[in-house]
Length: 163
Image (cartoon, rainbow, N blue to C red; front, side, top):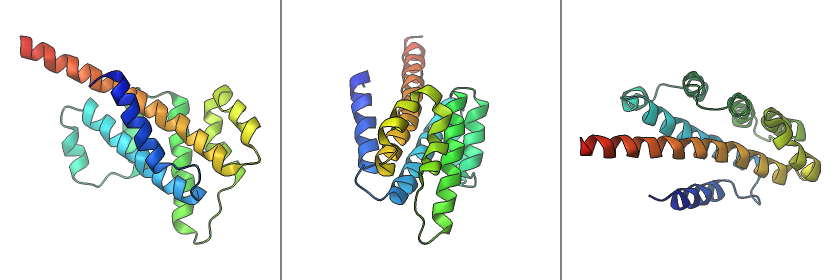
């Protein structure tokens, strides 16, 4: 699969999950699921028998983040953003009338530092848009790492087929 095709696939997946017009709580819940999907893909690509770790279904999101963090593939900022996303998601799951606040979006975006600041300035009055662009940073970062891992996997398979 070409790099452009992978980028298009991941972009389409993100926009199908994280519609900027949907309720922010739904965006949090759906993007949490998407990032969990990404975490599982990373685990499956990095561990030779990652399927065994994942098949039991006993790992929590936080445990998957910790496992992927131990691989030292993701930037610390991305890992911290995922941890903060998990905290906000847990609040959404336990409050019937939860409203996503600016400070919660900032907790997810702040780990990105200077990359987050322009969006924070531009969309401070529009929490759904700021949330959308913040989560896009996190998902794009994860998708980029997955793309690299998939390319490495393909190269290994091709070289083992030749040998």
